[in-house]
Amino acid sequence: MENFDEYYRQYGLITIFLAISISVPVGMMLLSWVFSLIGVRPSVPSSVKQSIYECGFETVSGMWERFNFRFYSFAILFVLFDVEAIFLFPWAAQFGYLSKEFGLYILLEMLVFIAILFFGWLYAWKRGDLEWT
Image (cartoon, rainbow, N blue to C red; front, top):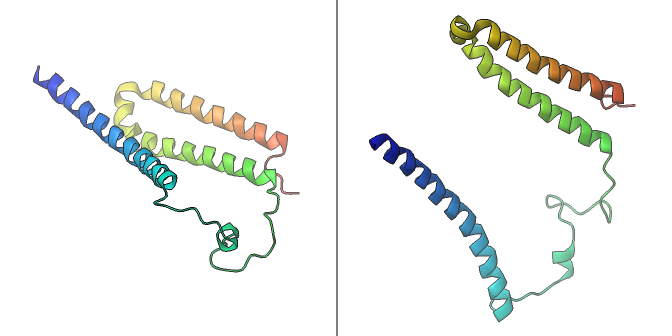
């Protein structure tokens, strides 16, 4: 019975943490909104507040330039394969210990994982997502 009490106590702490981490930002936004309604926080727009801020320098152009989509797809592929590496390192570190018990199963599981990622990379390559020309 003590194990269950400790188990639920830990979930209670997580619940309290989540409640505080959600209520503090929401409370700050509500407080700012209420202050703007009653006039404590005045809204005074100006040309300086409306200007684009670029790290303290004067802006080069009046508006943002269009973003090329190939950078987005390349970034998504980078994140995908970076997460793959995150999953590979713990597997490689524990493979020696776990191979005594589940050797072939763990190896086949990781080979299937790598094969799925390889086919995803092959698909992206065939679509031309890795081309810069």
